Image (cartoon, rainbow, N blue to C red; front, side, top):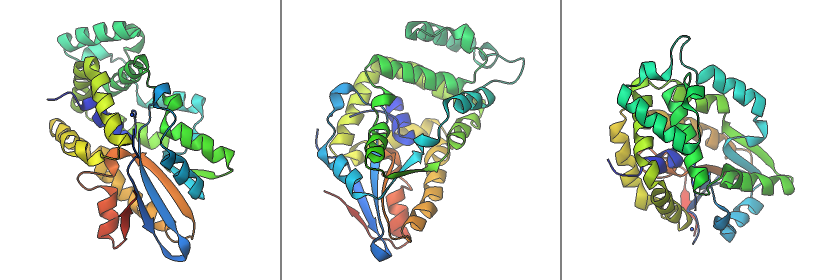
Amino acid sequence: MTARWLALLCAALGWPALSIAEPAAWRVTGPNGSEIVLLGSMHLLRASDYPLPASVDRLIDRADTIVLEIDLDDIDPVAQQRLILDKALLPQGTELDDVLDADLYRTLDDAAAKAGLDLKLLARFEPWFLAISLLEVGMRKLGYEPERGLEQYVVGRAHAAGKKVEGLETIEFQIGIFDALPIESQQAMLVQTLMELDEAETTVAAMADAWRDGKLEDLSEELLGEFDEFPGLYDTLVTERNDAWVGSLENMLDDGRRYLVVVGALHLVGTHNVIELLKARGHAVDRLH
């Protein structure tokens, strides 16, 4: 197993960072002037990642409507907290040390302490939630912050220009993906996250450089190999969502508007990606340069 699990999670769900040329983007055109531009996303950025490449601003300015995986305007922090408490908690009477083996629990306890988290306060949460929590804390310590992420930047520019923002999915759906994972898959995610947190800075930097330079394909083969350790996870995180998105994208091509669609980078490269699915349905898809 190589040290790329953190980059994999970020690419599949739209999470990490950036470094120098132009991010990869593709254009699909439809009748009556309809247009979709697909831009691979990195969610967590550092202050040093700004200014973003000028091509990002050009894509935002050209679009009539911005489409993200989740409409950030629709997220109510209080409702989100209630949702997490509903979905991320273990069954009543069960705690983390009941579902994790003793060695893993001790390793998790040490990692949580280093991250400034009290594991006793998180004992009722499922392993997937611990993995994501440690990932976020670890990224913040390296300077990667969601507040500086690509989506936040795009939404800020869209609001300033009076552009509409929409979402392909809901926060309920995305949390449900993890909540539905078997406990074995959740534990495997936690193990891999713990193993690779120490190497996260190098891993994320490599992912960032590939993203900003428009070289997503350079990482796709290695990232996809990571899914070998998690049977069925690729279908859940990527394939099934790509299939659902394509129908929504085709609907956008019918209304004569121009859309900028910002999604996790792994959805645009690799096996069963959105670009290939659109081509298979007869759409002309052009790589922007």
